[in-house]
Length: 100
Image 1 (cartoon, rainbow, N blue to C red):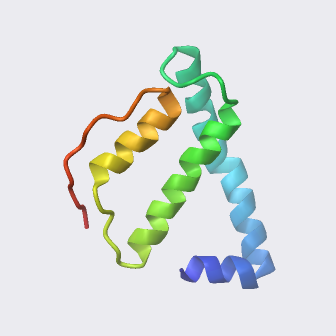
Image 2 (cartoon, rainbow, N blue to C red):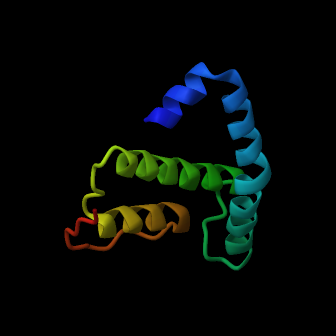
């Protein structure tokens, strides 16, 4: 939560955060998604940038939730949902499991 406030209120911090994300975090994820599409593991009806953006959004949400002290409920279902979203594979039934 503190990071979100800092991004909203500190223009220099926001600029550094955006540069770091674009230069060091986004390229490896984008390369991974592209490679997975090439080998047929990820769906190809969406561009790699869109899939990488989705994965990044989910990861950021998980980080924010954990940062606030809230556990991720039903981790298996979350992982399966993300997997099915990027692979065109229907989700399987998962047991409810919580991780702190």
